[in-house]
Image (cartoon, rainbow, N blue to C red; front, side):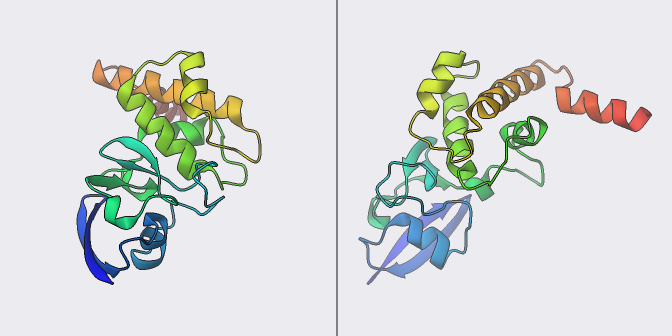
Length: 173
């Protein structure tokens, strides 16, 4: 056992673990984060995905000692009580079914939009390939990513987002 320092969702944690322990186990068992999930244990399904310095990584096959940089989990996407545009788009597009894959889907999508704020459908499919969804909501996921991209671009330009417009319309009714 040894002390490993991790920066997770903006907070520094020191954990006493075997350095070869998969990062996923430390995030879930030692830090109590429930976003990253165990799926296949082989890094193939994507449910364990975290962002490390903005890059999507499979935490089930990464040793805790290898985790250097800012680690972002699903819990770290929202800021100051505000949902990330992707999380809001997931709700607006009614993506969730069973919910098992959404950690990986959302974090892979966040990494994509951080690299490419206006991806084409083909770029979305390529970036999301390998993040499996048991319920086959791939078209809703793609629509949510496009919605989040539009929302983020609109916010950057200072125009109201679709969610804001819907809230204003709902309040007026």
